[in-house]
Image (cartoon, rainbow, N blue to C red; front, top):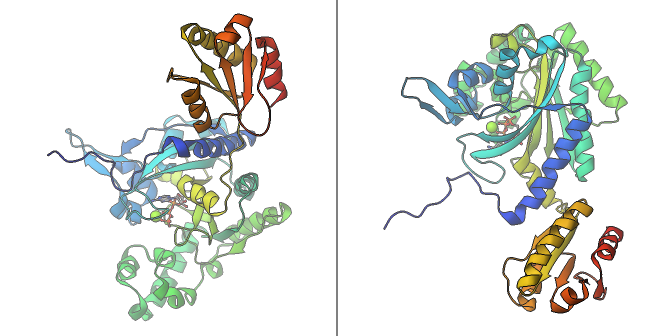
Length: 422
Ligand code: ATP
Ligand code: MG
């Protein structure tokens, strides 16, 4: 027997029953971003592997072990995008966009990482991200916090904390790295295997470990904050001043270094304790050197990405799954003539009503079975077309929720009725 076909581990289907919430969540996010003056961009899911390696950094988890890569017949190595910033920066450079002035953009879509699947961690997952190019001031960093803060409020989310840190300039970081390496070398016995390896490749990443056993060696480590260059210190102060002015609470987490190589100065994560180990729902920071590193003219940049699966899990955990329901009507029709007429009525109703869901019955079954389908669709009303209605040139409306009684009327009155019921 041939093997049963099924989805790849860690890559999920979105079922019809779950899609209403996803769509409403995505709409809320995208509408908010548009309201803040950001514009949508779309880049390919596949890029040259080198685009990601150069952007993300060769010593990161993503590039070391999480990328889906393959070689084309011509020898070229391509990869599925593990994140959205690399493609976005590539696009900015290729189309010379920052030359036209500050760019405020957002992207959305599937990302791919070969990780161990678990709750809140998948191999195909979805991000919506914001990026600002050519704005050096901390006002840009603060605007991103303002937008995400507004989003959590719009969604009714609670128990989310903003953690911030600064990574300083690359020069300050190089000086700090030396001190850090010396410290960890003195405490090698407390490092796990992964960290011993990182001590050689990317020592700052040790601070980002998820290993609880290393908690004390990490918390006693020297802090980058004490090695900051003056401009970065000032930038961080300015960032905090903006957050205070906006009444956005934050905690400074000096161990926050983020998984990716490209950050400098501001880094941040919005985290929650409601999702276990996968508690970061949104993360990002400043990456002033990346555009130049990827071959463009030096252009400061700052951005973030929201993990949609984790946001959905959090909405579930906090019982915020309710989606505001639009008026919905199931068109019940009995007999051949009524089928035709109900389709004509559907098209008239679509023209007359905005924000309505109309279900055409396709079972062509009995009244009873059509009403069952109407209930299953959770329609607010049944609009009934039987022999009697056809003869009287009327329709009957039956409320399917609450107490209302069935009434017959002509189509114009029915439109008024539905408009009044919104
Ligand atoms: P983590 O430390 O949890 O691995 P990360 O630092 O790798 O996260 P980023 O690359 O910053 O994550 O991605 C931004 C956001 O995308 C994360 O905060 C998270 O919400 C989401 N995310 C990242 N990886 C996954 C994944 N494998 N499955 C689901 N969501 C993810
Ligand atoms: Mg990761």
